[in-house]
Length: 67
Image (tube, rainbow, N blue to C red):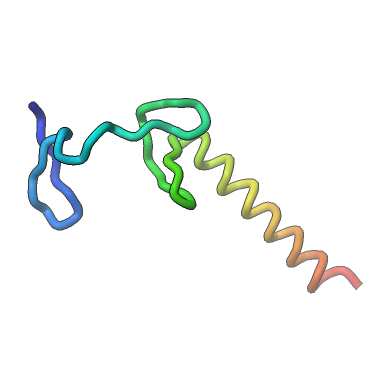
């Protein structure tokens, strides 16, 4: 079985970590992010980040730029 290195550089097999996580939205096994305790693939995670960033920018514009 293939092994991978964890954050501190030691090797561990996939079974040491349990079942491989899947994206909470689309079910893809290609997980790249954990946001608020849920796993996401790049496509779904980037949508969440973009929506959140857009919301924050709109709030700042409304609060600080509009007169």
